[in-house]
Structures are given as structure tokens and as C-alpha cells.
Length: 129
Image (cartoon, rainbow, N blue to C red):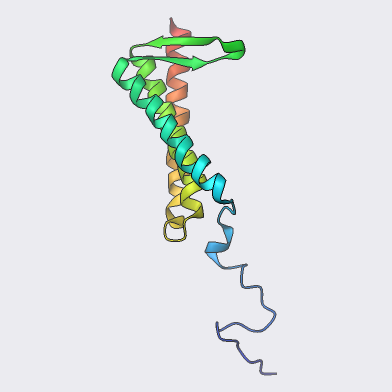
């Protein structure tokens, strides 16, 4: 039995989203893309730059209290903020941009690795004191 192909070269009734790599993109809306994927990472990046320039930072805590850090622990906290910003930007902005969604997976992985290693170093420096 011979079946006709449609314009996309598929048989009628075939699931076209199954093997379309663009179909697995994050399906967020405008506000998630711009506020969660652009403005929130910009704020986190400003926190990272402040940690690097001042060589001091505060790790947020409960009830308005935080853990004050100085020196290399604060610089590592800045890298943790940077990793979180890269992860959020990749997950919410790049994955929703038609021409850049291909870079979202590598950005998420890079941001997560930087965040985890930097936070582990901060924990090491805090516990070693």
C-alpha cells in the first residue's frame, strides 16, 4: 500500500512533534521570558558584581537575617549568583527565543555547574572557619 506524503514529507497522521527538537522547548509566556529570564538575571548579575568589587556579600537567611561573608568566600558567592543568573537566563529567555533555543541546554548545564561548585566552596569556607 502506497501512502501519499504531505508537504513536509511526512505521512498523514504522523506525529510531527515527536522528532522535532524545537518542540521540547520551554513554553513560557511573555512575563516569564522577560521578567524571569532577563530582569531577574540582571539583578543577580548586579549582586555578583557587587560581591566581586566589594569582596563582601551576604548569603540570605530566614527572618531577615543573613550570613555576612568576606574575602574569597564573598567572591565565590558572586560566582554562585552568576551561575544562577546564567541558569535562569538560559532556561527562561534563551529557550523561548526562536533563534537561540539551541544554546539553552548548554547554558543551563554551565549555569548549574558554576552555581553548585561556587556554593560548595562557600559552604567549605564557612564551615572551615
